[in-house]
Image 1 (spheres, helix red, strand yellow):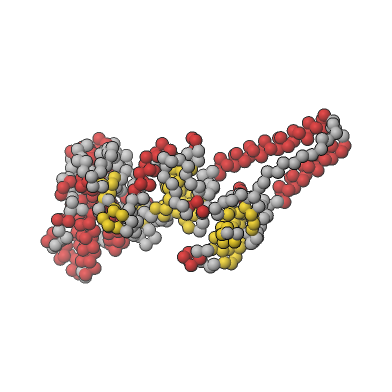
Image 2 (spheres, one colour):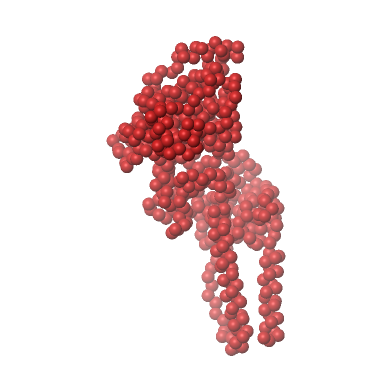
Amino acid sequence: MRTDTKLALAIFLVSCSSGAILGRSETQECAFYNANWEKDRTNQSGVESCHAEKDKRRHCFSTWKNRSGAVEMVKQGCWLDDVNCYDRSECVEHKEDPDVFFCCCEGNMCNEKFHHSPELIQITSSPVPPKPDVLPTLLYSLIPVMAVAVILFLSFWMYRHLKLSYPPMLVPSQDPCLMPPSPLLGQKPLQLLELKARGRFGCVWKAQLLHEHVAVKIFPVQNKQSWQNEYEMYSLSGMKHENILHFIAAEKRGNGVDIELWLITAYHEKGSLTDFLKANVVSWNELCLIAQTFVRGLAYLHEDIPNLKDGHKPAVAHRDIKSKNVLLKHDLTACIADFGLSLKFEAGKSTGDTHGQVGTRRYMAPEVLEGAISFQRDSFLRIDMYAAGLVLWELASRCTAADGPVDEFCLPFEEEAGLHPSLEDMQDVVVHKKLRPIFREHWLKHTGLAMLCETVEECWDHEAEARLSAGCVEERILSMHRITNLIAPDDILSVVTMVTNLDFPPKESSL
């Protein structure tokens, strides 16, 4: 090899390696701007300090719109570790004409200046060089090819490795069979942060939508029907209610065999009622708050409401009521989630192909376990009320109000049928033996808990027609909370003996 060829090759390799080493710039602070600062209760503009784990890189970002040639800022601030931002010292958007411009970079305040520079394919020509020696030609040809191959391999590996943690911005679905996303969501970068739960229909992630945390439920494509059903239920008229999980958008991700179906909703840090009761006990006031808001959401779900602003809200049966599907907000109010098995009831319309024996086995009503359900609206609502009685029992089992020990958290029928009961196990316990979870003796010595236990018994009655409605249960919980707040501690024992003579709200409000 000639000396000048070796020298050129050495300079090329050294410049590549030094560029990679020196290109990275540590980001400590970024320019901050929030167009919705009043709503989000932040500053409108300023400087934001960036924080990240030791092995994560920090960047700055800017998003803006082009309004007839004028720049309209949307957001600026810190951005989490993103391979697309590595070693970029300037904040530049390269897409030709996006709806919302987005750029990211590395280096303190590097997003203070940003601009749009679309990538253009330029065709250049060069004079034919003189015929080179064969060996140098081979070397100059192979090195770029090998470098491109290595870069492509690393890029593919990083894409596969980081795909779940750092997905691209949401884009509209192109599949006409799938529902479109919210039009606002495509304007906002969304990042998955932490896997929170796995279930039979998919997994749930905590995610960040700009500066707001959201929950992303991801369904594999084989569970498309459950995803589709949840989307349709959330999209019904009148489904926006404080005790029903707030829905944000539905989205299709990926192509071919990698298709995933996403459902984006509000995120609640306290998680499900199951998880909360495993780790915490509740006071009497907390029990009343959780129980009241839970049954209020269920009563609203069951109600048929015409003449709303956005149309007619049909009655909806949840069909999988359990403590795992009741989420707790920061103030301990409850909201109902997971509508993958739900049914809506519209006058004159069929409910479609309905399979009666669905749901979680330990929460199945006797008629569901027997396969003897009547396929009518009230029958499905009564099934929900049976399961609601079991959820209220779970709350009572972790309440500190009574003068006695508080049990470790236990699922309904865990003592009678174990942790993983079969359908036959539940049929034997619930249908044949007609057993129900037990009430501890000391619960019945507390005025409020005694009233609650009586209400629970009427919710899980073996005869479906005898069960209370959700609206009636809500009235009873309000009533027993009021009564216990009026009773002095010295009067509790005398009042307990009178519980069976109290005038509860009438059962005429039941189904």
